[in-house]
Image (cartoon, rainbow, N blue to C red; front, side):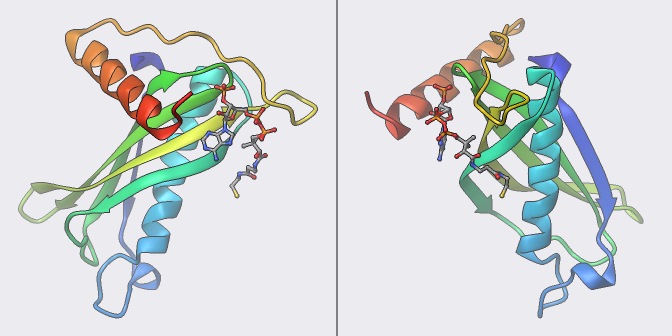
Length: 147
Ligand SMILES: CC(C)(COP(=O)(O)OP(=O)(O)OC[C@H]1O[C@@H](n2cnc3c(N)ncnc32)[C@H](O)[C@@H]1OP(=O)(O)O)[C@@H](O)C(=O)NCCC(=O)NCCS
């Protein structure tokens, strides 16, 4: 699980503001999608596309001038699909204060060179924390798509 982990950091610039002067949700979603794409492509070893943004919790705003970091990890895989959690942190550089502001759950699907879903490698959880994430993601998947 740790091999596919990705981290993307950027600076909140003026063109990314909403009407309140904070980071616009659409821009944040793009960053979340990019971080998740890197984790998915690393795990799949090839092209993968967003199939679904299952959930995005906006806990706190991120302000202009702060650093925003999206950390993505593959938590569970099916045949061609990958369940990915993205944790978002904001950092005020002048004080070093770091806040956990958002959590997103997204699903990516690996594609072959004809654009058809392609089987991905199985996921190996090596630590207790990874095993717990895997267990929770498996439960979530059962709730989401009951067979
Ligand atoms: C995602 C996509 C590849 C699925 O193709 P499909 O032919 O419907 O695939 P299938 O029904 O055979 O399902 C393939 C896998 O995707 C999963 N899947 C399909 N739609 C899904 C959805 N909306 N949410 C979660 N998982 C989904 C299936 O559960 C299946 O998982 P598994 O292989 O692990 O069992 C296809 O819908 C697509 O290309 N969508 C556009 C994606 C895109 O352009 N994203 C870029 C951002 S706009």
